[in-house]
Amino acid sequence: MNSSPLVLHSISETREWSGEIRRSGTLGFVPTMGALHEGHAELMRVAARECEAVAVSIYVNPTQFGPNEDFARYPRTLDADLKIAEAAGASAVFIPTVESIYPSGLANAASHAAQFSLPAIATTPLLEDAIRPTHFGGVCLVVSRLFDLCEPSLAFFGEKDFQQLRVITQMVEENSSRWKSLKIIPCATIREPDGLAMSSRNRYLDPSQRTAALGISRALQSAANCSSVAAGEKSMRATLDQHGLETQYAVIRSEKTLCAAESGAKFARALIAAKLGAIRLIDNASVGISSLND
Ligand code: AMP
Picture 1: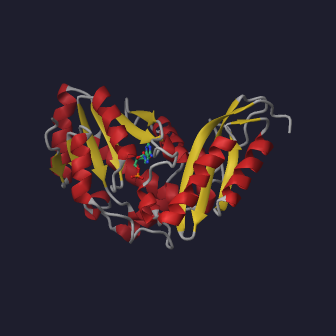
Picture 2: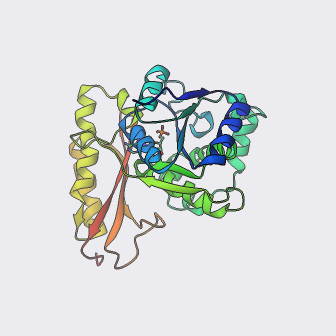
């Protein structure tokens, strides 16, 4: 039986607790926006296996949402979240206030996010960065603040948000003197039994949209062993169309740069963003390519 995680609200208690943990062992960190599901729980379980203590943060970060996005309606399910965190072995749940994350106010935070010096992978692939131009500024701002407050040794991020995982990894590599010995650990995407990637936003789907959303994982599967990038992308688009999904992007890119796949590469990353009405879902998978000569 796991014991209830400590609930931390203030910066001082979080700093004090994490400092104590660091003196005796490894602190693992799982940043989230709450509305927790099995994908988040798996990150916590992996962290609990590798670390003496695991801190989970729950914070719906306003600066990573664009003006017409779902910040206001994003699901907030704190009681259920605490139960999931406990069952998954979290030692502490940090639920910061807006003031502790953005001490100089939200208006200033938005301009700090816009000025954040982002790693290239946040601005060059023209994937999430093209569709949500202010998103990674907000993500990097909040994650760097959380790293500064918690000072973890290992931080766990899901491959579900593949560009985000790569952005955070590159940000940490480029700031190795700020977060000394911090390592980012990627964790595999957790899916529903029928293949849909778990996401807090799946709660928005009505039954017919839930069925249509399966088109995303099916599209990724259709490109799993493609003869070329063009063939894989074509089959993904066709599958998304068949399911009535509006494709924002369905591309096969270099795993490393998320730009064009290297010539001759045998593996690459298929990435999809698609909409069902106002609901936007993303997913990705590794794919094998038998030839790049399109
Ligand atoms: P979020 O609460 O959506 O910001 O996600 C918090 C963390 O959980 C991020 O590192 C996500 O990539 C990760 N995550 C979300 N969904 C999944 C999933 N289905 N499988 C694995 N990790 C996930």
